[in-house]
Length: 383
Image 1 (tube, one colour):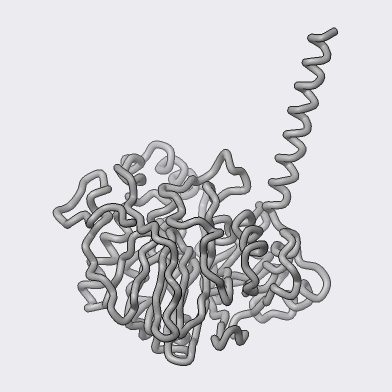
Image 2: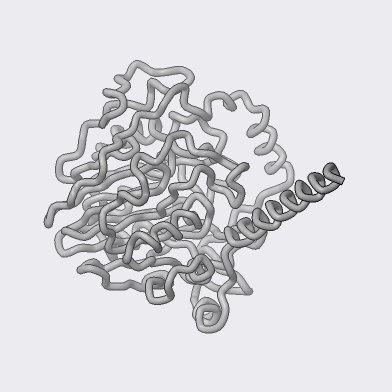
């Protein structure tokens, strides 16, 4: 009898655990827009035939191309090169109080960046979870810890989200920020439904279409076009994706989010530039998806189209999301920046950059490649 009781208790525990895990996964998926939110989506110029669309037609992919990607991911020659060979150096100091003037950028890894601009603070695409996946036991995992605890961030004035992919919109991070901060979340159309499901108050959600803006803390925050896609399940493009322009009284910053290279960047530069700094996606590219992620060279071309002063590459180094070697995005963007005389800063995760006086690029990442090049590796972890 005792054995049967123990077995029954164990079975009930497993069932309860499975139910809770399923609920968590379903919550991670977010929610579909309804009511007024859905009506705004349907009225968007970007929404056609039941989904959001890019300006340029998508690149058609074949079954053979998908099979090649899977083969390369599992068995490719560069598989071991996709990870650093040692600990990634980080700056783990807590954020300093911002100056009332000036422009400072802190890259926390991947696409998460704190922008301190003219006395205000804006946080882009915060992701602090261990994995970028609806399952915290599977999916791409972090290659370095978050440089600072999410709860230790200073008071934020705005939290900006570019799109709803797991490496840019993280449920656990959003829930923590909803609890520890009072800043509004500015998101593309449709993503407000995700946030509401995750208990973000409705009065802290601002949804924008391309070329719409909001005024927050003395800043003009504008959603601008990007060339990408969206979706947290098998359904695609039921929320919008965007890039962002942050304009303060004295400075301007552009953030690309995820995007392929397209002629819209020149228009953004004409309408909103020039920019003091551009945060540009340079990682997770592949010939199999040329229209949705930029190569490092295209990142430099984007920077030039935008008429920006300082290029800070993002979307690399923290998660393994493509087949290229871990060091390759930074190597290639450095080479291309030098070829076009572009001012470049490549910070360590957690490193705070003064845009008016950026640090010299020192190749710190190259010592962590499978085949290190003859560049200095940097001073190691700073505290």
